[in-house]
Amino acid sequence: MKNKYQNIKVLIPLQLASARVKMKNIRPFYKEMSLFDIKARQLINADLNPSKIYISSEDREGKVESLCQQYGFNFLPRKQELTGNAIKQSELIGFILKQIPSDNDDILWVQVTNPLFDKFTIMLDSWNKIQNLGFDSIVATKTIRHHLISESGIPLNFNFGNWHKVSQDLPKIYEILWSAFLLKRSTIESNQYHIGTKPYYMPFDDITTIDIDTEADFELASKYYAILRGGGG
Image (spheres, rainbow, N blue to C red):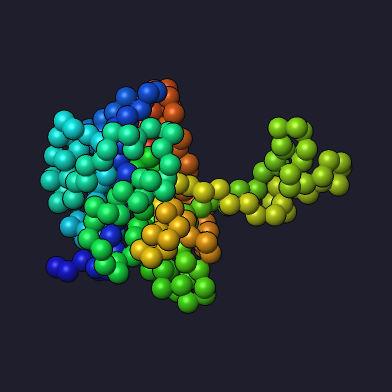
């Protein structure tokens, strides 16, 4: 059966270099599935064409390439110097774009590090509508309404005093989930970034953000994910 979203290429940066959480993206996370496995199945379930999904990794041991073969994805070998937190996104994006076929397919840039985000069909089905409104990209976000204070102690979105607004009445602030970005190839090529100059911040307020920076974070996130999926914990 033909996949629904034939004009979409998916790009996934999957680096294995992590000083704090070793092999975070491909080690078992939930029922022997890794963060990568979870995201791969979500994308396939969203009716995206596996042959148009590209995985960029510096792995030289064949682990990621083997996973790509398992799912029917494309493996893109990445230079070692294009890994780590110090890399420039423009260099990484430019490098990846040169590795994939040059055509008019739109680009869905996906991170595997938030396993709870699976709203790809909503983004894809909204894509044509928001382009007609002048937006050049969709950014997955979450609306937050909290009383925020700067490092210097200055309120950012309210005023001190018994007249301060309750959290429900605060102005909307959008947190970028760093889970998924959708844009035209021409936009990602010109900006060398996965957010355009006129982004549409699409809120997914039912998504829980899981930030995995330490081994303790990884274990806690795994247990939380299991509970939400009905697997106990």
